Length: 249
Image (cartoon, rainbow, N blue to C red):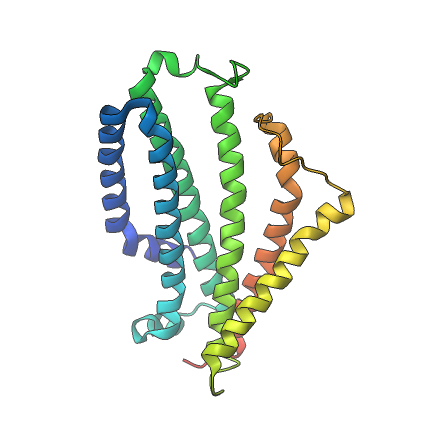
């Protein structure tokens, strides 16, 4: 599995270098040109851009190996279907964590340029009630949860692609049917994600503007994150089983 993960990152290193260099240059330009007013705009644009890039790259990483002849060689290696799909999921997780940390570092860099490195950790948000590092810790926890939900969503795509290529390989309108399965999977996943909050009777006041402490944020998101990890494991097993037993390349 480690060789498969290494192979995936070797294929992507040029893209990573281009994204890092371009983003740093854009970050320095935005902070120098627009100052404090440009920080939230740049953070929003960067987060959307990184997410789109991540989603497209991770889906292509799996789809090309399933649908193109160049990916056929991966299935010629002595690796089980579980290993192949597991390597894709771990690569997606590592890539997402890398982008998450990169986003935090870029926002920190922008803030340091605008406010000065010496003043950065002394800044207070919400009338001085929350320090910069605590705000960033909250953001990290929230983005980690978002990353898990994104991988969960991408795994429903993986499963739909695998079903289309295996169980539905010789079925007419397999593309339309697999899309319906994708919708159904996301409906089931959505219902499953609500279970812990219904059982634990969680009540979250979305009208509250104040940023909670990191421990409160983690407590609020933990049930959804744990459920997401379980769902990701089940979807990975499903795709792995189909690759192992039913795939028709």
